[in-house]
Image (tube, rainbow, N blue to C red; front, side, top):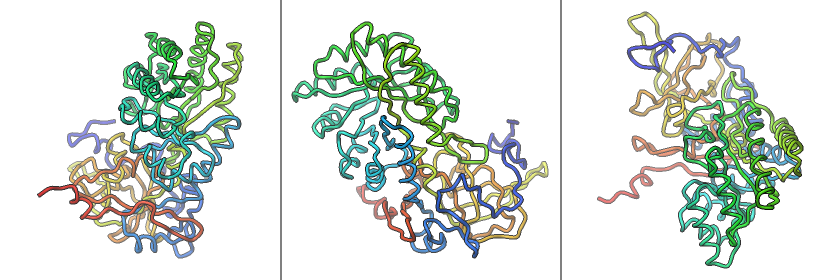
Length: 464
């Protein structure tokens, strides 16, 4: 990246990134980026779940998250089918509400939660407690007690303090809690440093290299109120290369064998976590859930055969790979402004009525997104644009680089695919902007599953 005196956002100004090609038709949809029901109708507007996005925008306002319920459910079923004889837990942190918890449960998935709030949603949605896995690196005593009393199926332990906390709380209630030990396997997945979670220098898990993981296994096995189901690892997010899981599985299996040889423990399960990548832009080429299932099952079976141990029951935790592609954010264009520099280069900034309060990932991770003109088609040639939000930050970018029709104008609708994961769930009220609603669409019908916040909502917590 070239250095520019105005900052990194301006480096290479006027030039598209190498992976972004000039479209022959800026109205065409790259179908693998969008939910299954999305199409462009004869009148030019996008249709999602059988409904015209212009009608949805008029009814529910913009910005709005539109969730294709059938797409979400189909992805749940595809992961369940991809892991026969195993367990799939939907990673609630990607996007959780009562509806999505219920959909995942109805399609045969368990739920992976990591806070008391996520647990409350799961229980209110009617998810069977035995199908809930409780993650998190700093579970409070109150959260542990609530989960025990609710009958949560398993705890994924992250520290020696948690082993003691859970063991004590379970013993006080005459319970024996099922647990997995989260192992930091020392792999640095090829992803952004903030979402890589298995290299040594970070907060999650028990490290293999310093013997803490082996000590944690011994401590759990020695605790009468805990039952060790197996070992767990999560190596990061937005991962496309299954080779990283091969290394993770090999190291987990080595510890699995050591637990048998040193303690006589036959551990029935092995968890490889989630982090499976999705396609946000043309540069992304993820595996399908079926392909992932084949690769992961083959990896574990091979490592166990090499170690001479039976293959344990495998579990995975897709979140982004289910919710991400199922949701589209629709914005209204407010301002279109070409910006010229002394060099003679220019960039067209297209400002929309949302931004970093509903999608922080571009600002936080430099995440790349795509978008399209959603309310009409255009005969204008493609123009390289940057879609930005309405917040008082120069880093308030929604789509860093995209080719849009050169006649994009105020009042147009833009649709951004792949916004189901970590957009609504990481949203904020920055600049006192109310958070958008989430509207589920299915077979020509729409319903609000999270309502739009109002100014009254924003003021309700204030004391004069």
